Image 1 (spheres, rainbow, N blue to C red):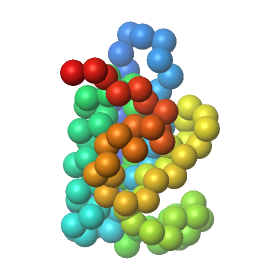
Image 2 (image 1 turned 180 degrees about the vertical axis):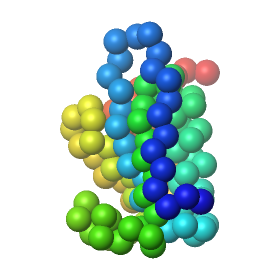
Image 3 (image 1 turned 90 degrees about the vertical axis):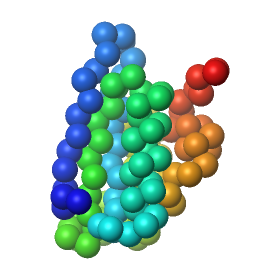
Length: 108
């Protein structure tokens, strides 16, 4: 896993604001790998390309994590749109993650 890598999805044509997030991981940690997979699925299914995601490996950038107030990995920080939100854990409870991020779940 790269130490720090921004990922930009192609925004859709709608006027939905772009969600800006940072996922803090411990490279190779099972919960970090699971959090990234869970977040990838959420972004694919619910954000329609309207997101900017940066993944930060706290083992390679510990000062960045501390400066951002991150003491637990994996952690997801959403900075935009407001309100800012932080979620700790592997993001496996998709319903709770969606609610925390302010995303309305799609009906099947």
